[in-house]
Structures are given as structure tokens and as C-alpha cells.
Figure: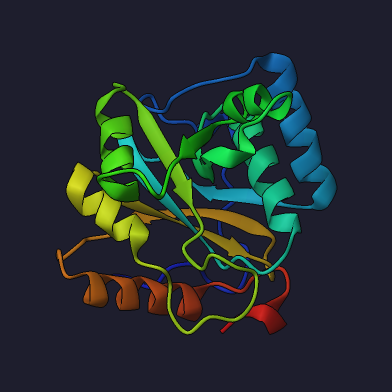
Length: 210
């Protein structure tokens, strides 16, 4: 049985300098880390846990209930110098924004391409020694009954672990939770992961939570 995650009170706050992993892709410098930390502190948020020591990983973040989640995610990554990439439709990579999206970690994907999204992401993972991908499987800030399963198809095909990151508004913690033990059954894994987030985490706007 997977252990229960976060408690409803602060039990342990992880210092910024203890969050990083030796295997993580890195970006930024001392100034950008300082900016990220000041933003997080200004918003009143902290970390709990530590990033995984894995060269390739898919980060699943939830609950996604507010536009502020993006600000929190970007500042959290900046604060520890983490380069975590994310998928974006290729049509959005037009001048002058295309270069900016790539600098920020955007990966242009073509859903009409032969082999589909999964094939493109498998190729992306195998092309780099260190590749971390962030996904919000709800796909929306509205209430959902289930997560989209694309992240699992990519994880199975690329043979990379899925790491859970929880947004917990009552304690204002970004919780670096755990690598989830996948069974290979997408329906089972997806339902178990969704249920785990629902039981243990409350988003910034909890009325948007399924």
C-alpha cells in the first residue's frame, strides 16, 4: 500500500538548497535562483521533499485549479535552478515568441505527425542524457472526473518514472512527493494517481477541484 502523503499542517519545510537533485537538468544562475526564491517567499509558499535522483522523469503536477499555479511552478523551478520542459503545440512557436518558449522549456509537438505525440516524446527523452518533463494531467483548471492518460502512455513507451508533485494550499507547500509505482495498466494507474491527489492535496481554488 502506498503511504499517505501530506498532512494538513506544516511538519517539515525543506530549505531551497536541499531540494535540488544531482541528476536534474540545470538552468539559470545565482540571480535567477534568488528571484525565484523571493517570488515564492513573497507568495508565502515553501517546499516539502526533494527532487528525484533520476536522469529522465515525468513530473505530474496537481491539483491544477488556478492561473497562479503557473507563477508558482515557474518560480519554484527558478528557485532551485531546475530545467523542466513542457509540451506546447508547434503552431505557438512563431516569431518572436518561438525562441522564448524554447528558452523557458517549451517543446513544440505536432499532434498530426505520424507516430503521434507519444512517439515524439519518446524520441525527445532518448535524445538527451537528462530530460525532465512536466505535465498537468487534468488539462484544465475546471473540475474533472479523471486525468488524461497521455502522460502514462509516454511513461510506458519511454520507460521513465512518474513523479508526483502536489500543490497544497492549506499549508502553502509545493510537495515533492514520490515516484509512483506503475502497473502498466493505464486505467488502474490513472485512477490511483488521481485518487491519491484528491485524498492528499487541495489546490489554490478548491472549488475547482473534482
